[in-house]
Every structure is written in C-alpha cells, then in structure tokens.
Length: 322
Image (cartoon, rainbow, N blue to C red):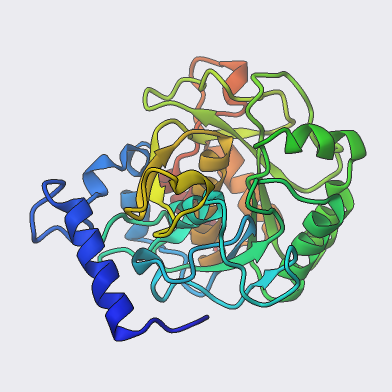
C-alpha cells in the first residue's frame, strides 16, 4: 500500500485529534472507544486476552478502502480494484472503509476507534463503485481473487442498494463462495436490510450469514432473517472509520469517522471473531461451527437466527478443541 507523506500524516493526525476532543481523556488508547458499544456486546475485549487475530487476513470485498486513513495505518495488505482494473482499491463510496474499521482498525494507537480483531490485517478488494453497485462478474472474481491471494476470512457486506436482491435472483455467489471455502477461507456475509424472511444462499453453500441486532440484543428493525444457521451481531448506530476525503458517505463529514447501521456493519464483527478463531488454528468449518454453537438466543427469537455472537465464549470453546 502507498506510504503517506509526513505532511499528510501530520494533517490527518490533527484532524483526528480535533474529532476526538472531548470524546475521551488523553491517556485513552483509542479516544472513541467509549462509543463502541458493540465491542462490549460481543464480549470482544474478554476474548482478546486469548486471541487478537494475529497472522490472519480479512478480505473486505466491497467499495475499497481509504488507503491513507490514520486508523488503518499498518492494517492493510495488498488488494485489488476490479472496478478500475488496477492495484489501488481506493474507496469512493465510504462503505468499505467503514466495514474495514469495524473488522480491524488499528487498536491502542491513540487514534479513533478499536477494531474487532486488533491483530488481523485487511485486504481491500474493490468490486463496488462509488454508488455502491457492482457487476456480478466483478463480485464473483473478487471473492475468488481474495481466496487465491491469501485471505483467511472473506467479508461480504453486500446488502445495500438493492444488490442483495439481484445476487439472490442469479445465485451468482454460491459457486464463488464454495471455491473460496475450498481454498481455506471462511466466508461471512451480511443478511441484507429488507426486513424480509429468506434463505439467501443455496443450503449447501459454506457461508456464515449474519443478521443485525441492536444494543439491547434484539433484532434490528431492518434485518433480513431466515438463513439457515445464521447468527446475529450488532448493526445499529455502529461507529467506525470513514474516508477522510469527500465520498458518497462523507458529503457532510470528512472527519474520518461516523455511524452507520445495517447488516453490513454486523457482518465484519463476525468476521473479526472468525479471525480470532483462525489464529487459534481452527479450520473454516470449525470456525463456523464454533461461532454458531456459542451464539446465544435465550428468547428463541427467529430474527436472531441461532443467536447473538459471543466472542469470549467462542475463543474459549476453540481453546478446548486444541
């Protein structure tokens, strides 16, 4: 990835300092951490004592990433841009940058937020354009490319802009996901935001579908549900990284941070948990089974699927498998 100039680094550090003023004391490692309710809901801090996702690459197959974001410093590995056909997957929308920060923003760096898997790396694979749309061919190629280039976890937050409906109709993702799984990658996918009961993928497709929950652990009003063996994770008012330049999601906010809601936000949290389990040596099948088996749904709410993900319980269960 590109290196920033000293001037650019200074400017972005000043921008972040201005944003985080009043959001936490000077000695807090991540000044915006107090606003990240989802980390605590997922029991991620308790899980980090066991694993942080070291030596794990999470591919974010999405709109790209802000390659110069201060809170993604050191978090990125080489990716690809299937929209422009080059190796600079710059995010012109904002969605992919937000998803990336949720999964693995730089943690304990005195800047912004904490990522769900502090030790993992992000592989940005741009398959969606500035408007959030993309072709079936590019999405399929992006998934396979990520697996071929070392992704251990592949996050598909493709529930926006009516994209999910088109993908479901064509069934284009099933084969690509199966190929990726065969190469050793865990594929985690957002359920979609149409408040609809559906089974988005073929039953034989090895994919972990994620519904969205609110801060009370209840289903988000917009979440799709009904996918076989789906789980749920926080997806309402989620604070994460955004581009520090003007993009679709930053027309009125180029501070580098903001809140979004959607199953697209829930999915990368589960990808982060998958990264923790990958560090513990579990196979893709074992990772999906462990996350599902430790999810909690005491009320039996069908919209939560198997239940809300519990990262601490998952890493504890993984430790018992070794």
